[in-house]
Length: 529
Image 1 (cartoon, rainbow, N blue to C red):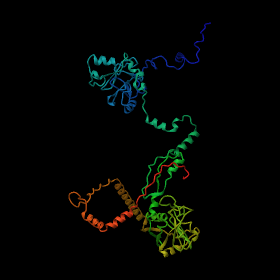
Image 2: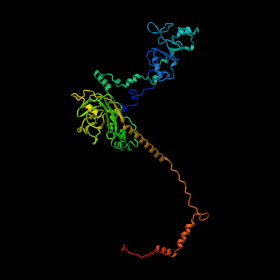
Image 3: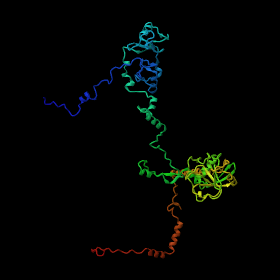
Image 4: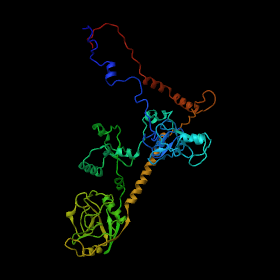
């Protein structure tokens, strides 16, 4: 045995082993076969038999249903990749025999893979080259063999030449080399449906999926970004939104570094300017009721009632419940005690005030089904009902038409407290609406603040005006000493000369003599420290 018999037993795959026995790169050469022929009766784009054939001037055959979408999407020749328009295509007319095979309409020879096939561009008829050569080219008879339409030699298009088969080698087609495909809109829409990828589904699963697709509404996992609205000075609250603290303590909130004032609700801002009472008249078939609304104390409840009166919401409704010595209730369009809604489309909160109680006759209050469930129903008391305090919101009183209220109380009712005679609201009239005035005041205040802010901004941005230079010291005369006032100087001199001794004494007394400091250079110890 040789000494180096195991020298090629390596612990890894060599390049030759990987290339020859495994999936390594093979020797250079075409990945596909050298020649793959396409039959003449097939579309060069779909590689399927054509139904409505068209051809180019070079004899490339396409089907109408395939080439038109291709030109809309790419605008090129699928075989060569060059630009091409639809008007450059010629419609072909192939003729078939009784056996449903393509043949020449002149010689009746069946077309096969070895036939020389040509077409006439003007007419689109397809013939064998033998017929065109014998009947057109040699005798120079330039007319179509079937229609006698004048033609020329340039109108002859070669569809298949047995001596040049490279044209049918679809390995060289541009759209196959670059893997270009048409995008079908219907298929793309179907792919968006999750059921497109489900192949084998039983009936039960299909029913469940159909119900899911019908009823399920997906929610956005990520909230839509909202543009931050910074409130103006008037709408800014005294507290912030708290987003800085939320961003600092929670990873689900975007970090913030700037405090933003919270925005006051427009209704709440409007209610601050409501300082008056509201007045409404309710017309019934028993008479009129004049109401005073406490808009300055319970603004939200009064606004709900006032807007309903303006919108004629109560017109045509009836008082569906009346209890003698207690109250009469209305405001429900369904007349069942279960209907009605507020002007905001949802129930609103109660507004209790200690000075608004169910005391006396003709108190106007809200009907509800529990705390904070006010909608559109209201009731008017026939007498004091203090047990309803802090359960129902008092928002008005009857200031005119108590005789009408008495007539309504006298109507007989059945066992369910429903009046046996209909008590209808025929119309509602609003005399005083303090909310419209409040909205005007809010807009005026905002305009004033905006004007003040604009003026402050302009004053801040303006460049300060340069002051004029002073004229300098006052000139008393010309020449040397022109800035000296001689009159004041002579007056001061006469004053000083009047009592010179006194001034000298004063000067000596004012300045005490300085003591001489004795300097010593003796060496001493530190006992005196």
